[in-house]
Image (cartoon, rainbow, N blue to C red; front, side, top):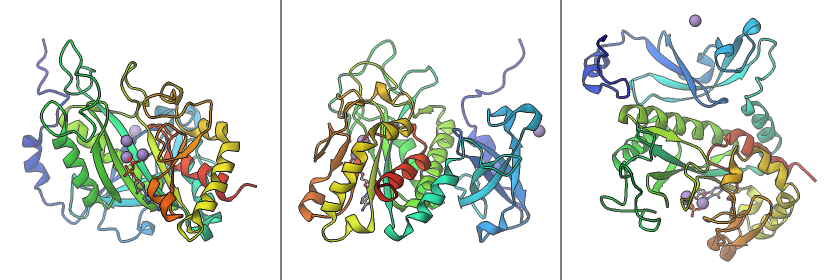
Length: 358
Ligand code: ADP
Ligand code: MN
Ligand code: MN
Ligand code: MN
Ligand code: MN
């Protein structure tokens, strides 16, 4: 049998280190992420440090290999949209979020950023802000949730949410690495916590201006998935990774505008909620795939077929935090979006419904 070398499921940090210490001769490396169809990336060399998005050139990739184009007309163009510091290569190296465009110059069908930016521009007077709570589940190389006992299950849910102590919390080291990498990169990460199901975690990004929210969330996801490569584990953004009495994973979308944040804001929030109720099913359509498995009306969710709202109510579609109801102004939380949403599409429809529709 041919020699297989070292495990392909593991990053060999010890071997890599001496190469990463080599000087780069003034060149920098830029990772280009196509965030619109899951995560893909490729790397290019630039002549020197970048100080503005305009310093970055357009590039392309083979869209027929990603389901984003036909083979006969396969170039998809990558247009730089935002960039962050690269916590893996460090120094002047950067990671770039790109929008995807077809050969004929039209936005690719998975490019939800394009429309989102137009919407944010149209609503800029209201200064919409978002804060997203990204839940996710870690799986080991055996395909089971990371840290779960072989051939069995951990004890029922209860002690794991914000858990402390061996057996109550899994992979804290990796979560810590991700948090620091986000801060280094310039991602507006605002917190982390262990979730209700063991080996499920959450990080929060925001508040961000509407035009920045999607970029920051996608970058945080990218860093997480890359770091998980090093730990030899995978990250699932599926909204119901395990059937049974285990919580699903969402991406609660917290939202405010200049009007909701000002005196009398609670009244504006209630008007927005009425508009959201009218367009419940249109929102559900962009709130993630397989979300029906999660929005059952159990496990701290509102049922997918029925819009509801309440103050401090975690079993409803929309929750107004108690502190907001007391202050009479602030933000509200849309609890419907699943963990696998495209944040550009969700921020887009939220602003469309609350600010740009009758
Ligand atoms: P929960 O109690 O639902 O678990 P978290 O603390 O996890 O709440 O998340 C709250 C989120 O609300 C954070 O992502 C934060 O950025 C966001 N947030 C706070 N204030 C605002 C605001 N004014 N507008 C939009 N988002 C906000
Ligand atoms: Mn090639
Ligand atoms: Mn939360
Ligand atoms: Mn949560
Ligand atoms: Mn929440």
